[in-house]
Length: 420
Image (cartoon, rainbow, N blue to C red; front, side, top):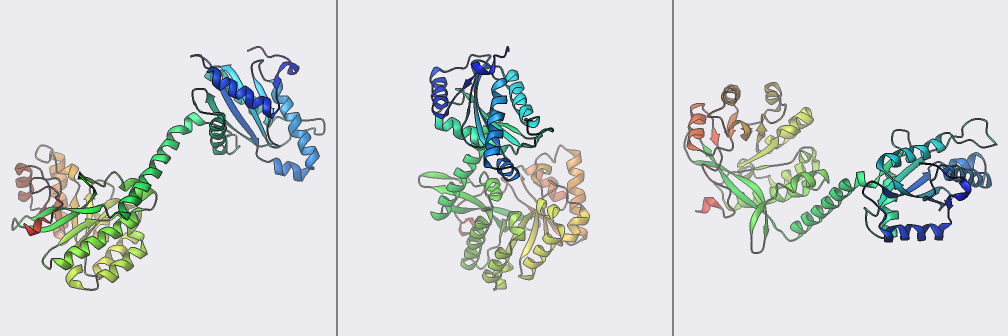
């Protein structure tokens, strides 16, 4: 684009700039090939400039910098110094590539700034944020807010001096969604809508139910219970999972107290394996070994891989209370047979991915058979999950698996199946 003299640029005051921005939004300035863009540029080290020189000189330096910016503007563009350390731009009619070049020119002006008082380039650090108009929609205040979000995500370094709100929008939406999920989790807890469903685990030798696995479900009035699995990753990310694991522990202990012959197993998250408060809670609730001896606590293979020594201590602590411990989803991660031995767990649950098609997959047959033989030699029990057909069950029985679990034997159900 052909640049025009500085005197013809739209160098505006605060009120004039906001009017120009409002008019641009109202006009819907955004042909298919070009766009209007609002930019905020912040002089990050403005306080340092004041301390190096003085307030008056720092103000003069930024004013001169604004003048240099005006020299690179086109006739349709507008510019205004909004604060001591911030400059706003309204750029019109740029394609995406032209906008990228314009932002680079603005940054170059900052990087190479000199004035008559300095023989060398002056050290100025700036960050730039932008938002497209009117594609972004919204009011003037919303546009300013979006540009602020983008600009504050840029730290002013050469590698990250510029950020576009459009590049961040999906992440912001995801963050808002996560916040909503956490609010929902809090409401579920407050209203006691977390309940347990129970799935049988069958002893291969006797054909009888040895354990029931407790699986977390969310209940709502008039609706069928749904799995809580979708909430777990976000609950773990926001450190809410420990509360959920404590709720599950309380529910398990309550059922075991009411049913002296019942055995239950449940899964805990990676975060709980290093939660000292959860272990303290176990110590209080499981003083009676007639209860703790009927609990099987499942930890994930990922927890063992993350901190083998810490996980081994956690396993030993639970076993010291009288509980048994199982390593869940073995084969889904990177735990070796050597690490498995070091953990000293009581049971291994084989990842369902190896079980579903075991009758037709020779590699899976080899892995499962090797694992069963290995664990048997060290006195560990094995559980095959996702057993969905009689053929799969028969093959696993022939391999001498200890326990079987899956829809072939029973789906999770809310009503206590041991009372039927």
